[in-house]
Image 1: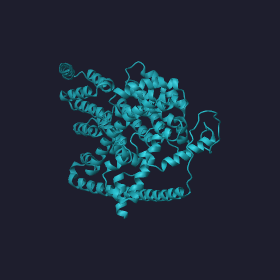
Image 2 (image 1 turned 30 degrees about the vertical axis):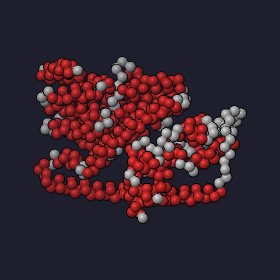
Image 3 (image 1 turned 180 degrees about the vertical axis):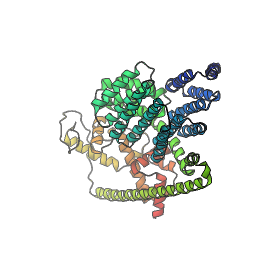
Image 4 (image 1 turned 45 degrees about the vertical axis):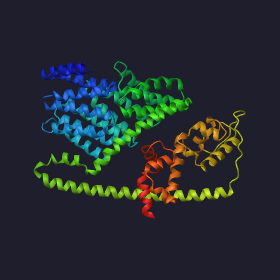
Length: 528
């Protein structure tokens, strides 16, 4: 391995010293598109080697931005942003507006991924301003194309899918004006069009754009865009219940889910794989995939939360540094004003967030109290549910409430099963760590198909989200009505209600309530 990197370093050195920029770009692109998909550590070493022997600011910037991009793919947003900021320091000593724009665009992307949309918008505006100072029309169009593509991602994240499609088309207009070396960007645009039309439930146009992307990608080695195309087509066929075609693409994306170092890509693929395993009733693979995704999401959550906490702690120190470079002659005054403004903005943001959290807290407590009263009334009038096994024969189609699917079992069977679920909800069995769909089916004397149908139809959730909701409601009730529970650590509370880890519990609690458990406990203590 060391011999390999010595040879790579020697080869790269010859490239740099001979000013062979085409070869430099070739290594850059191969590392980004191919090596990183197979061996992220090797890709990062190559990027470091490129930087260590770079002699000009532009080559140093490019190699450092390669490292930043690779760290983004591996989910390390802190290092990605750190490398981008270092690149900005280097390029700011030059008049290269092209790379300034690219770096600002990259930072806009990182903040968008972290859902810090104001920061993202600020960097996007800076990137567009830098574009105005670029002279070469080819570079202007290429850079504006990338900026429009980033705006499309921004709008798509906010679920403004029609706006996203508009920006994708604007992006492609700029790329078309370049007329060379834009295949990768065009491929990504086709993939993005497929995704956004899918979100708009226009499966026809979505399929059309995904297939177009597939044709463009067939002559090149698979990269993360290719796998996103496979993933999109798999979802379309799953929506159409065409399991045969879906399997073809699910099998293709499995390679990426097991080997890719691009964590966000793996997370998306795990979602699709679970959909396929649910439809094919492959409980074992569904469980394995869910465990893999839980572990992956915990890692992503830790990295993103850590970075966000650090950002607020330092009052957006990086942003202050960037802005100061444009006002060096007023450095001290400008820094003080910016720090004061940041403090005021942070205080206003904190107050708004606090008011929103308090409002949500009151709603949760009110709901918990109402539910406790309802359960008390039900227990007084409750009649024992007959534990008769549910047969899987003589099926009839029974009408259900408006908006529900047509029944797959007799209406009497549905009513019995609903009653048994109510009985189950009055127990604490849902807090069992290894609770599974087959276990609950056995408890209800039915099969997993009937049980899944009733949960999906009447609870409007899948099995795992249904159980998670019961667990969170249980712990909310305990925290609200038993002050002793508020003294426990979050990890103990997580174990009490059946979660495998503190991070998983925190993520589900926030998803169900909108606030984290530590804040909920703090507000409860303040109330009493």
